[in-house]
Image 1 (cartoon, rainbow, N blue to C red):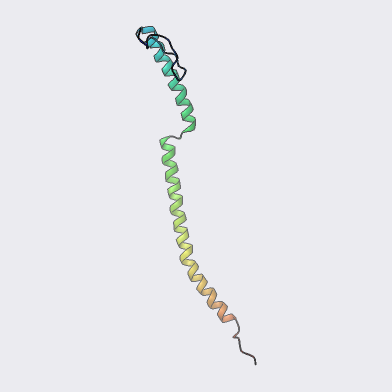
Image 2: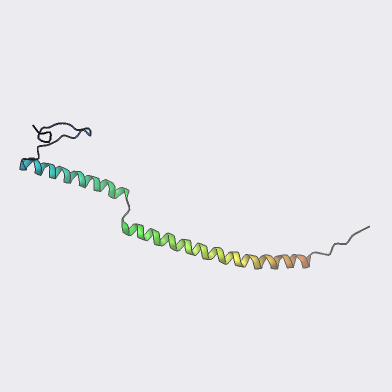
Length: 100
């Protein structure tokens, strides 16, 4: 006897079926289809779609660009404001004299 014609349990615990008869072949096809549908339902809840991934990439990329532009804007303007603040502070501060 050939091993694929005799029912036995393989290492995954699945029972082999005689695939030579049409009724068992259609039963296996139906069971396989049901198993694939169940797997697809499980994966669809765990994975994101391509369009969701595309939208996420666009949003995160746009946010990164806005943050980069804001950073450079504040960095450039911070230097000018610091220089003005130092000059104002120096003018407002009285000159120190030595006392002896």
